[in-house]
Image 1: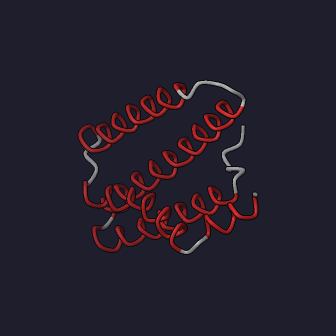
Image 2: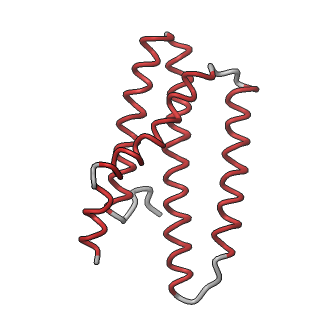
Length: 131
């Protein structure tokens, strides 16, 4: 089992997610100090893990549907992933008492990386190569 996505578009997004997560963690450290670094780092780590899990679930669901399987597995897997994500965010913010704004900044690397790669045409270029 490998954590590196096979799809080139997903690989680009994962790379951008990792780079932005590190950058946002550094910015949070400058702005909020060690508490901000910890919060942003945890948020970025959770965002990277969330995207990699989502990519694996999506790839398995597409493969299952292509072979005639039902799409219900995707719905159940996404429900389980989101439940786990909410639980981890709750633990990070309420139990571990991480700073909310730095945590949100770190986690936002996920959304921004998807947006940046999509807007720069990186996802479309690699999809065109796959056809």
